[in-house]
Amino acid sequence: MINENPIGLFDSGIGGTSIWKEVHALMPYENTIYLADSKNAPYGLKSKDEIIALSCKNTEFLLENNCKIIVVACNTATTNAIKELRAKYNVPFIGIEPAIKPAALQSKTQTIGILATKGTLNSELFHKSVANHPDVKIIEQIGHGLVQLIENGDMDSAEMEELLKSYLNPMVEKNIDYLVLGCSHYPYLIPQIKKIIPPQIKIIDSGEAVAKQTQKILEQNNLLNLSKRKSSQIFYTNSEPEVLKNILENNETVIYKNF
Image 1: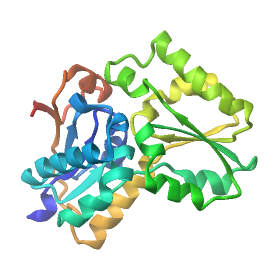
Image 2: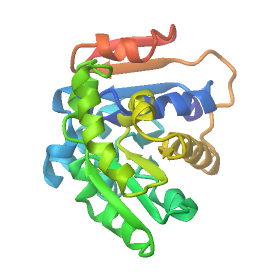
Image 3: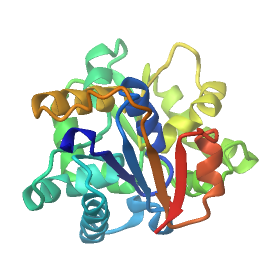
Image 4: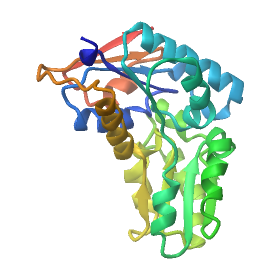
């Protein structure tokens, strides 16, 4: 039954597991396959053509494993490649992009900050999103080095703290009241970020919205898994699996494999 086929997710590493956690929490009976392309992380430093090629490779791997829908759990891959993916493959795609709209609509100071990769901030899709909110000042900051530290398991390091302070303090000085996390790796930094920014600044990421959209598209296509059997969660990584294992808190239903 195609309904019992897995949801496929991919990211340039472990960051997209923040999206997977939201998807799994909302739809615990859905089988999932997650592809962590850590060997090629971060995508944010690569050219658009390279990002498209890697996204196609990841998609084909997931399709070979019978995925019924694919979540591009990577802001950079979504903003640079989802148009090409939808044109090339006959499967529903769910993208993830920075949650600029809710932040812009709710901002009282009319100033919001966005922390994202270079690839996301330079993308056409991102510029279109910004153009929809001309009355809101958007402070953009590339998160140089953050993905690499997360991939290395160094989230609580002194180097991470210094980088975050250098990126966030200028935004605070410019009176932002919302901080948009524009990379699926960054939600894992929320505890550190909260130590740096004032409590009144709200942090927004896209995880919950992506999970709800995935469920909606599955429903529309009659692809929801209606069985109540224990689901299978398979994670593939082409890098050292220990960081991935730790970030997933050794969920007992997870199988680790290399590809």
